[in-house]
Amino acid sequence: MPTQHNQSPLYFIPGTLCDERLWTELWEVLGDDYSCHSLTIPLLDSIDDIALGLIDQLPSEPVDLVGFSLGGYLAALMAVKHPERIRRLCVLSNHPAALNSMEIRQRELSIQYAKAGQYQGLSDKKIKQLIHRSKHQNLGIIDTIRAMEQRAGVDTLIGQLTITTLRPDLTAELSGSQHPIQFAFGDQDPLVQHSKISRICEQNSQIQMDIVEDTGHMLPLEQPSKTANILRKFFV
Image 1 (cartoon, rainbow, N blue to C red):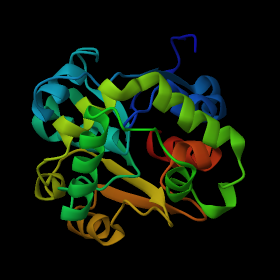
Image 2: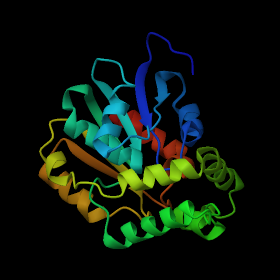
Image 3: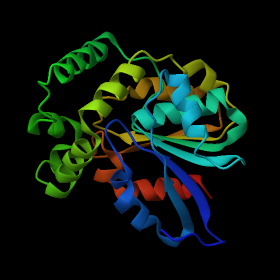
């Protein structure tokens, strides 16, 4: 998207095994009002190092930041660890807390399969768990998810899961944040605990949330227009 002087820059962090294609339709809906830039999650030795690697991809002045899923957690971590670099923060499809024991075990199994050469990619069943049932026949969404995963590859899967599975709970730090923060997630997202985000919002008037109906985990792909409206309302 060409940059114009009157555009507001927005910086986007994708999720696990995702790339800039996650944002394509969303950016088209946003149009020329914003200059949109997708960051790349680096594979480094620790989750704090990843946050620093993402900070290095930003300009020196404070920015407006959008993160999806793992990218949402990383965006929140950047706001906690490097608050002077973030102006406003939008977290999509994530609550920035530690993973539960079931999620950790599932990730450990995925790493084992991948290292043994037994990882076969996302199954139809797994993809359909990530999106609302009304999108189960939407080949555009399904093909985009598959294409992003294939481009990322097994080494990226192993690296991202290994480094980011054990993560600190950022709830307390965000509750006391001075940044305006917007959460948005689908009403049928199986990976987001709505109650945790509600509690953060109750504790800080600068934090708000939007719940998008008939939507699973892949909010930017499933609801690009509604996501764009949320961003426009927040990043005024």
